[in-house]
Length: 258
Image 1 (cartoon, one colour):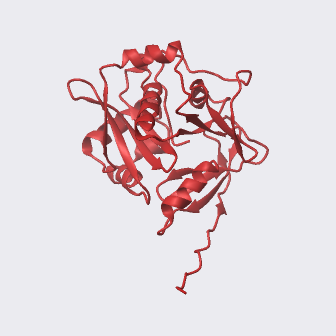
Image 2 (cartoon, one colour):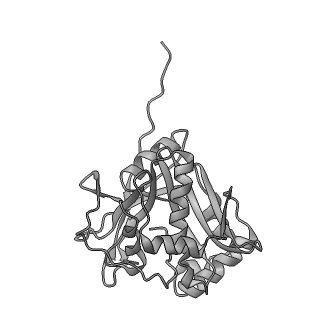
C-alpha cells in the first residue's frame, strides 16, 4: 500500500477592523487564508463556492460584526437572458473585441490602470500603485488566471479584466477602463462578455464577487438575471422582489476586487 502524506492544514486568520469601502460609517473585517501548494486550484474552487474572493495568493471573505451587506453573487450562464437595457449596452460596444491574454503585466495595461485609478479612485490606495505593484496584482497567482483586453477597431486598449478560471466558471477579479467612456457602460459590457465566454467554454457560472445593495458601485451586479446569491451556506436564485439599486446606464460601472 502506497504512503499518502497527510493533508496540509489550512489556517484562517481575521484581519483588524478597517473602514468599510462600500458603506460609509461601517467597519470591515475579513477572514483570510493562503492559497498555495499542489492543491491550490481545488482549494480555490471550494473557497469560491463558499463565497471567498482571491487577491494575489490570498482568499478572503467578509466577517463584519453586525453587518451582512456583502452578498456573494454569481450568474448561471445557461439561464441568463439579457433584458432590454443590457442588450442596448451590448450594441453600443458591438465593435469592441475581447482578447484572452496571459496574466502578464504590460506598460500599456498599467497606463490605462493609472488613468482609471486617478479618474475614479484618486483618493484610494490603488491610485499610488507602482508598475511593480500592478505586476504583482496580475502575476502573483497560484491558479489559472488570464487578462481580457478590450480593444477598439483601431487596436486602442479601452478596458481590461483580470479573470480566474475555476472548474465551474469564470471569476472576475478586477476590471478597469478608459475614463471618459461612461456612456458605454464598459463594466456592464465586461460581465456580458464574460457570460458569453463562459458559455463558449462550457462553464456554468460567472462569479461577480459581492453584491452590496447599499453601495452604488456594487449594486449593479444584481441586474444580470437570473442570478444566484449565497445565503446561509446555500446558493439560491435572487427573487425579483429583493431590493436592487441599479447603476445608471449613462455611467461607467467600476467593477472592483469585491
